[in-house]
Image 1 (cartoon, helix red, strand yellow):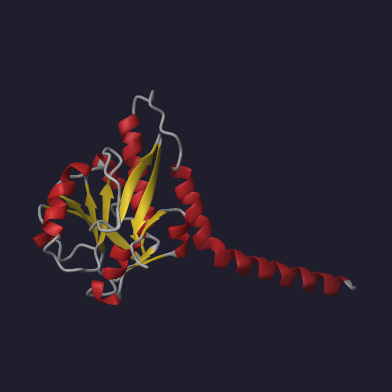
Image 2 (image 1 turned 90 degrees about the vertical axis):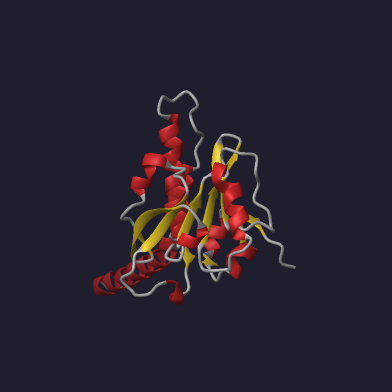
Length: 208
């Protein structure tokens, strides 16, 4: 093989490697991003509460990046993705880590709503554990809309189940934080979850 042939062969293989890496990048980014935050919370740390809030914020942001909303969920291509806090803010100052970030090519904006009647413009609804019962009472009478509901269940004994109106629950497994996904509820709302996201979640589904 000549020197020119060697260079050509190396360039071709190098290009193929870059293409394969590019195709795998979304999966790699998700696994790295979420796995990094799946660590044991240090109970002795002075800033434990702030650290846990940052972990929850990171989960919310990275989960949203692997969810697809139907086109009709947005009025224009420039519309922001609106994350609404239901009645209270479960992640406190860590919400600033989400404000202005990009999800599916859209900037994230934050708003607070006191009831589901105010959620017409929301794309994500974040629910604190102490507001869960209020939300569930309201949700019974609401239509299925493309609204990604994420409940913070890390501070309670509540588990995500198939009949729930919650799509994603942040849960605590011993000293670690993870998440569960209600596939039935997400399908009803017209939201699509990435297969890579599903691989890292506990799946709750009542479909046959």
